[in-house]
Amino acid sequence: MHQKNPELWASTSRIFSCIVIYIYHYGSLYGKDLSPIDFFAILIFVFLSGYFSVDAQTKSFKDFVVWLLKRGLAIMIPYWPVIALVIFFNELYQYKETGFGEYLIIILGGSMFLDNPVYVISWFITLILWLYFYIFLIQVVKKKEIKSLVFVFGLAISLVFHKEFYFLAFNAGCVYKSRVLLKGAAPKRGNGSKLSEMLFFVQNYCYCFFLLHGGVLLFSIKVLRLSAVICFVFSFILSGIGSVILFSISNRFQKKVLISIEKHINLEVN
Image 1 (tube, rainbow, N blue to C red):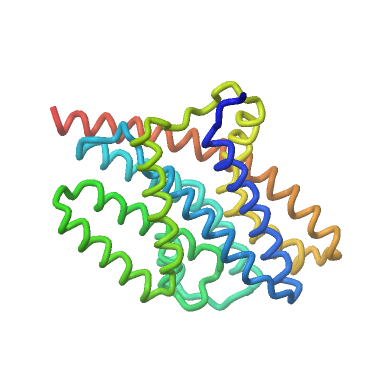
Image 2: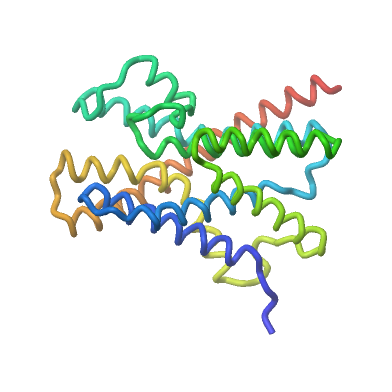
């Protein structure tokens, strides 16, 4: 019997959700309302984010700070070049009227606070940053009573922005991972399954694909004016190629920044 690999389902789910979101945005640009599939795909994304946010090796306050920095950089470093391109093309083609203040909020990852951001999918950046900060607080706080207050505060914030289901899905992922760790069944990457290795490799590019695909679809439809079928195939391939390039560049830069930050933290501690 083959050993069960927890990361096989995780990688498959992330790739599947990414494709579903692509189909949703493609359909919406052609006037098709596919709202339910988008909602469930993002639920899967945030559940997985919660699942991978719990790490048995992260114990000290410094570890949690480094963890938060890593997660924040992993989100923002690929995001900034994409949003810079979006802003450039928006100014060029005047797709949406956006002022300097709104651009600044978008660059800082605060699109969820805007009614109609220039890049609609960027609201997810605010959500995931907030969820990472929330779980950081949950993990560094020691008293159960304060943890409960942090949870209630997080839920209240989520209700204000109508993101309570995503908040609960994120927490469900954290709880599930905690149970996996308690049972001593922590997932190991590449436990001998070639399929698992391949899927894990592909899912590395899902976030960059998510960032790029909306802009690529808009460019294909509004600027190139491609037919529906050609647009679907062309945009998917271009988003895929772009995500590989973006991931490679941002990953290298992220590693350099992290090395510098960790050296600085070590100096401060010592």
